[in-house]
Amino acid sequence: MPRVALFVPCYIDQFYPDVAWATLEVLERHGVRAKVPEMPTCCGQPMANTGCVNEARPLAEQFVEVLGRFDHVVCPSGSCTAMVRQHYEHLLHGRTDYVALRNKTWELTEYLLDVLRIDPPRSPFPYRVGLHQSCHGLRELRLGSSSETVGPRFSKAQKLLESMQGIQLVKLTRPDECCGFGGTFAVQEEAISCRMGLDRIHDHEQAGTEVLTANDMSCLMHLDGLLRRDRRPIRVLHIAQILAGRTPN
Image (cartoon, rainbow, N blue to C red):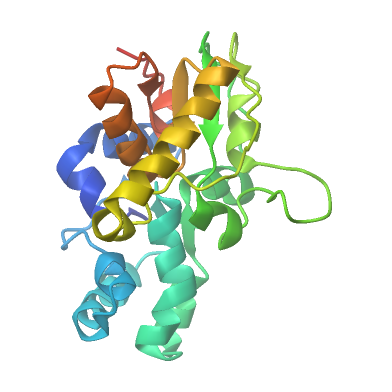
């Protein structure tokens, strides 16, 4: 049996631990006994995005050292997965142990569909669902087709969701627009970040979204904060929570 590591991003570990538990439940439901390694849970992305390369490199080195022992690494975050697959190269410069790890690190939905090749779930979720497709997931991991590309339209998250019983996936005007979070961008450019987030929320409201979901809890954290501040009725769930059978409060 393959040795599988579940990498839990720092913001999920600190603020949304149920997303990690839900991910573990989904993996176990499909026969995967994943292990959560005992290690600091940041991939180094915040430091790298801010230009603090020297501070990010030790985290990348530790990530490779600890998680390189596993056959697969699964992460419920497109942005953290993209950091490992696309940006560790700038920190580790082609180390052979990193190259090996890069090729076996997966975002949750692609692991379920491309590695495990599961049948889409048929469990009930009778809600109007708006799918937010994060920038990292679309344009770095290709978890779905971007509006600017030519070719067949697809979305791994949508494929997993659309077969659930009673679900209605709403049609957005701008299905792949940025939510405005962007990690440290939300701190450095708060006003622009909030304006972009409110634009995304307005699109979901017009579409009749009851539950807003995504592959990235970082995007959902940003949108959920704006929703709660204005006491708007849309609820937020990570896709792992939906697949695990969670329902909105």
